[in-house]
Image 1 (cartoon, rainbow, N blue to C red):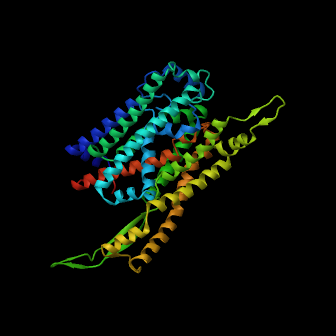
Image 2: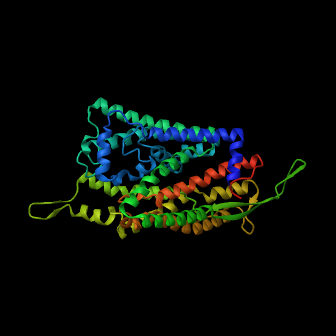
Amino acid sequence: MLTAFVSALKTPDLRKKILFSLAMIAIYRLGAAIPSPGVSYAVVDQCIQETSGGTSDVYTLLNLFSGGALLRLSVFALGIMPYITASIIVQLLTVVIPRFEQLKRQGQAGQAKMTQYTRYLTIGLGLLQSAAFLALALNGTMFAGCSVGDQIIPDQSPLALLVLVLTMTAGTAVIMWMGEMITDRGIGNGMSLLIFSSIAARIPSEGSTILTNSNGVILAIFILIALLVIAAVVFVEQGQRRLPVQYAKRMIGRKQYGGTTTYLPLKVNQAGVIPVIFATSLLYIPTLLIQLVGNPTVDAEGNFTGGWQLWVQQNIIAQGTWSHIALYFALIIFFTYFYVGINFNPTERADDLKKYGGFIPGIRPGRPTAEYLQFVLSRITLPGSLYLGIVAILPNLFLDVTGDGNNQNFPFGGTAVLIMVGVGLDTVKQIETQLMQRNYEGFLR
């Protein structure tokens, strides 16, 4: 692997791509530390010390994807999350809106148009999210329990708040541009690499939190568990069911085409990390409702008012309870089947095979092929959904040991390890492909 990496750096054009990608990532991490105008960083640091970095569950995942920049309301505070949300929305709308489905079938031109729609939606979501986070900062709920939480933004005039909103939204647009530049001029997977760098930036601080709340033995145990989880994730992510496909021989003019045998790969984890993001976002809704209607209180006679809020807090919002874990696990399984169902169309794949003269041995072309693909897909989706659920709930099972109340900040499981391993594998494959084109020995052997 080291020899292949040296060979990649010795290749001039590939070396430029790697260095360009690293430069973009460095600028991205620098922007995450640049303060936004009007934010008192002294108050922010005091709140972080008082609350030990604890944040509201409403934007824990966003804080993870921004590499901790959200807590400080920096220029890149929103991170890449608005773009991810916009991409998911546009992808889901292809099933609902016929216009989007037509664009999807138009190839590169249609994909460029879909990308343009995603950019516009990203800017709109950036405006909404930046305004929402400023509202949380103004009412003091960004840092629960901080004595000066409502003083994060000293100047609360409309003009100052407008400048803050525009600054954070512009930061989102710059991040989107940087990700596209890494994809076009770098080693590829631009948005994914930015997310990878944000999550990796959180690992040292989270490891320090575990060491502070526990001891070195506990930290060593968790590092060992992390290595085992990463190995398991790599094994499953690389797993696929290969369906043999044979193409019939065809005579076009005087030449004979076809007659080859290949395979149709169906990944075990066909949905990626999207079901985990969906389930996490849906579980934030009860927290939002509690904040809107208010927490349960005790009157003068000692009676609780708002008993349903208390029940929701104890059974759904509390991440260490078995009811929360079971609901989280069930939602991941449901969204895995849902996303695979809308993202993979067996009828369309069967029609494509029939169009180019391909067939699965022993299966008739057309509808029988579509039914067979649906059968195989439903069989491999079950272990894929169970795998996603188990990896995602690992942080919830260890909350009491680490003392960290935010499971998404836990660096050795859940969304973090799924994204990091997936992005790492894709990036290695990108470099591997470019090395193979130059007859060098690649990373994956």
